[in-house]
Image (cartoon, rainbow, N blue to C red; front, side, top):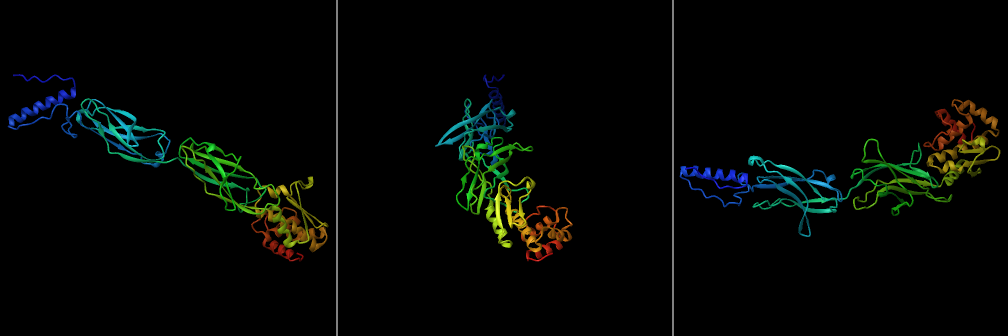
Length: 417
């Protein structure tokens, strides 16, 4: 006699019922008694024949760069289900209440194979800084109840900038020094964790004078331009105003740094500090001159005559007077170079002291210092300055030979070449 199966609307249920009838028939032939589970209730969470057999899990991002507060991101949800379809959700706990923040549909596993389905579950862009409790759930479907993963915690932090600063003091200075009246430029680069969201207004220049508190420089704008190689790396440039407009400002050590301003998405971060040794250029010149030319008068002028437009200073023979071009020593010139200028002009005074007449000094200079392309008298003064400040520079170029340096030392002792 044919066996008539109950008519049901669920394809999965018809297949399961047929298999169960077949199992009962086989068991009866073998003399074994089976008790079927009630219809609609899951026989087991691991039963591939149960339409409610399902499971959910999660996979966290592997890098902290994906866990930025107030920045969108996703968590990978893993799910399988034997039901027709289910909805997987990401829930966030707030004050003990679980709230759904994103969902994704999961298709049924084919033939009860329990193949995992991976879905992206987005957490909200306004997720707060700190630790957040989350879980992945599978919503109820028909007689199938909700399935929930174990809760997990993710730590969120604000984005940070990393800085690589340098200071444009001079094109060829041996130390980070500058006149108190110099206008400097702080340059560098920064990498933003939040790609493409760097705001120039979020970066400022801070200054600390003589180890004092850090304060933002008012009115100093930071210019930022994406580099040619990366949209997340920005070249920075900020013009730093002079420390003082006064010619009496004393020497002082000042540190500068880039800093990002605290915002809802960005944490406060700082570059390494760059320290500039500020000096009073006029005081440095006078101190250098008085060492070897104590009776020489020193003057400072903003402009020179047309025949001296390329000079940083000059000595007036017969007048025992040194004149220094103040803009030259006030604009980004390091300490050692300012000292070289002063020692050079003092060297001319020493030439005059040794030979009295300008023509006699020129003739003597030609014998020893005529190897250089420049005026032998000027090269002689350059070598005198090099003896006094080895880290300085030769204003007229070239190189001081050992013989010339020895001759320059004789001049400093008040002797002829």
